[in-house]
Length: 152
Image (cartoon, rainbow, N blue to C red):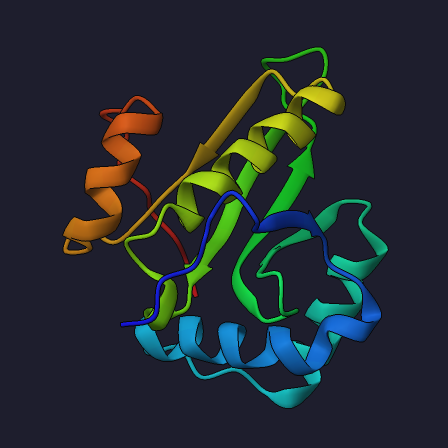
């Protein structure tokens, strides 16, 4: 496995020119969770992430310009908060870059952006079987007792 000097990795906002590097990461994330998505929704999502208002995208970029990971955020008001919350909806690191601290760097940038936007909470979810992610998340946040329900 090729290792990356994570001190040289920058985490920055997603831009329109990132699509060729972002798409393989997004596709890998969707494949990991077995979630097919239409091209229309993918393009719409990318556009919204680049605008950076209610949805925002961050990418981890190696010195050679390769995108190594992504984080997608949703900023929203809350009935329990003056300033609102930040939901980390998607986090993904390429298989080749895993285990090198890239996800941790993305989290640092998520927390920084949430602080800049005065969010009172950052929260996220993962599948209960994603033990590798859960090991990191146990270091970075508090696991709650709440269960998530949804309607498709």
